[in-house]
Length: 279
Image (cartoon, rainbow, N blue to C red; front, top):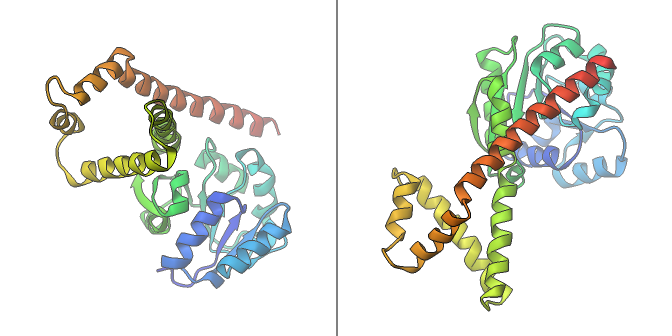
């Protein structure tokens, strides 16, 4: 549990709301949280009503009250936001960044001082408390800063501490990962329709199949390939289905998908850094 430190969220989108929901249940009191965004006062009032958090009229007023600052705006807006809040920072706040592609070094430079920064890559499953989040510390982030970040993000799922250079790979794997699963479910639903199952029958069967398989993977120390073979009887239905997936090079497609998403994260990060440098 947080020791009464004030946490300011700069940005009020869906990921910010997921963090508010998690934090106020297991990390801090609602009154320890203050939220600001660039516009849309109605959104701030909605969060205040729903979670009991405080709101600020602007990012600077939120930041000057904060011991921990969560950057949750769009990555392209980071320079403007940091220019606004930098003069108002307290002695040594911890900055937690959710900004894909923005390095801790960039945030340190925009702050204009040696400041602890921890960068995080959660995913959208934070909305239901099941995010897979990776965090990485900047040059001035000590062990205790990483521990605070870990405890905070554990309120919305599991957390892995990684070197910052690995965050592009994390983005391609688990950051974008929920969409890959949704895409698979889309295909399963279309297949169910093709083979004559009604949607109200097919959907719960598909979802429970996904959930059950994930739980099996968590509960078992067996490699996924072993679990797959245990389901696959020679000459049976599963073998027939797997044969088609192999024919369409399903595994190679998934690997290529994750590699491309990782490369795209690197491309977007480089473009963003170039834009910030020119600003």
